[in-house]
Image 1: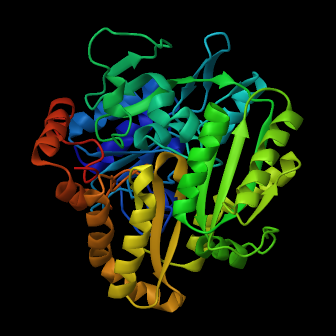
Image 2: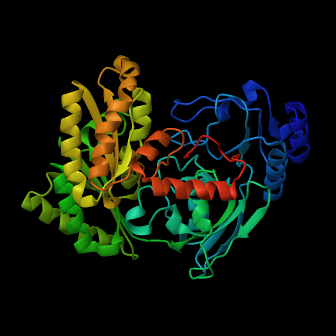
Image 3: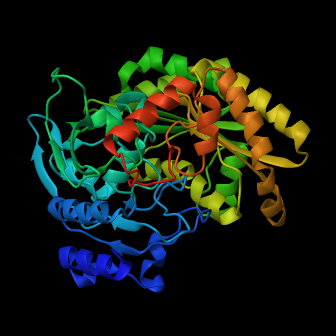
Amino acid sequence: MNNANLIRKLADIVGTGQLLSTLEAMAPHLGDWRGRYQGAAICVVRPASTAEVAAVVGVCAQAGVPMVPQGGNTSLCGAATPGREALAVVISLSRLKRVRAIDPVNNTMTVEAGCVLQTLQNTAAQAGRLFPLSLAAEGSCQIGGNLSTNAGGVQVLRYGNTRDLTLGLEVVLPSGEVWNGLRGLRKDNTGYDLKQLFIGAEGTLGIITAAVLKLFPLPRATVTAWLAIASPAMAVRLLADLQSRFGALLTACELVSDVALGLVRKHMPDLQPALSASPWHLLIEVSGGDDDDARRHALETFLAEALESGTIGDAVLAQSGEQARRLWALRENIGEAQKIEGLSIKHDVSVPISRIPEFVERADRQLAQAFPDIRIVAFGHLGDGNLHYNQSKSEAGENAAFIGAQPAVNRVVYDLVHELGGSISAEHGIGQLKREELLRYKSPVEIEMMRAIKRTIDPLGLMNPGKVL
């Protein structure tokens, strides 16, 4: 089937106005958020239902045409960007945006893949429930992409990754068949848990079109504080102390270096924290119950003790929801500030929480020895051991050349992560960026198991080729 016939058949399914084939119309779908990857495509189709997705996949499968599923296109590893060869059809899920059902008694919500994460958070809140997945891109990322990358975010410490928040899926398979696994059950021991194959698979095994997600009671009391600390070692000690004092009420514990915070100060000058200078910072959140004053008093007491003991150097305790949002904005705008600053080498790694201080000390030292004048922007989710550990030069003009050193930088960072029993991808996935790295750090047995699953479910290799494997 030639491209003209393929486009005509796809237009018959989704409607002429929902098929994009000119370069100008397709442009927003052909590049990644970071500007690192630029691809090409036969066309972009925008189906409005699971039935339309299945029909589109069926036509592409029959024609032997590769498919690239795409949500909000906020991938940080090029997972949603097609290759340069213009051999694929991009399938945008942005029109699948219905909330099909909310069951507040069962604490579940059934939603379509194109729903924007922030919309789901707000919809749950209107029903008096919490959907806790929260990350910087929540205003534009879509739940289908969150599922496909097993997104993490700032509340994994208490609620877990997207995988932990998912009870059921609806998936269009590479053949065009639809698997309906939309079950709102917390116990279902009837064989293989098939949904787990598609969560975190980055669209390489099928296209997630809907999901049943867990909800939680909406916390009525939430207290946020920003702390000035001396080191990652002190941060780990504080985390343990916070968990001992507050237990499951500790919702988030975010580590931020002063270098990372400095970029936010530079590019978002209205976001200025009222804190004394410090090499490291912690952003913490405690939530639960319905008494803000009691929760604030408990955290205030903890912070006073920490100040007296010298565990922290300074603290700002939010006195209102607006103050809390401004503190969170400091953390959530680090990625945007880095983008404004220019190119950098980025790592999304995890190590056991107890090894974070060792990782930072050793990686900083080795990189400084190998690359004089390197600037390291480190921040991340201390509570679950996930660190965003990024490198650039202080002079933006030097970074285009510095990007060429990425393989050598990766060896330092990833070899150390591997030595410490960590992962080279904590929450961003593999995409195009880390395919070769995956082969280096996964055992041959693991790689062959993954390839066997891919061969079985997608024997023609048409689903998001060039990603993960």
